[in-house]
Amino acid sequence: MVVFSSFFAAAIVYRRKPQVHKRLMMVAANMLLIAAVARMKFIPPPPAGLPLFLAIWFLPLISAMAYDWWGQRRIHTVYFIGLGAFVIRILAIAIHDTEAWGSLTRAIVGLVA
Image 1 (cartoon, one colour):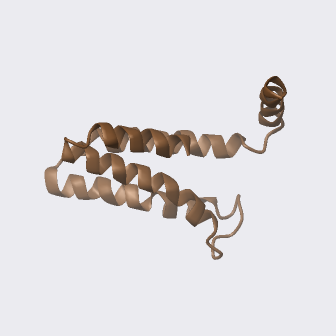
Image 2 (tube, rainbow, N blue to C red):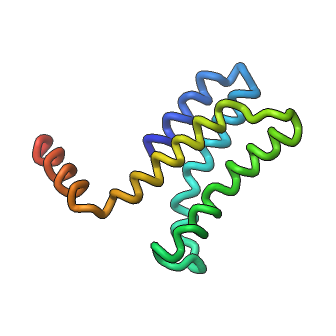
């Protein structure tokens, strides 16, 4: 939700620049697709189903990048920033179930509680 909120807030800030605004909204909406893709029954559980999961999740962003390339012969910078956010999100998924991540989150919760 943090990544979605960041792109959505940026889209609100840039609403007077339609070319930037629509791309930021596209990336923000695409970030929300992780929940929908995770619930798809035909995708096998990780690690076997990870390539299919990522392909379905990335497809709208890759399609938008291809559309930009096809129409303008360049890809807008917002899409590259969104792609970077996707990669960071994938790394977060990869470390989510590790013991190091669990101890870090327990330490943070211990500070708050």
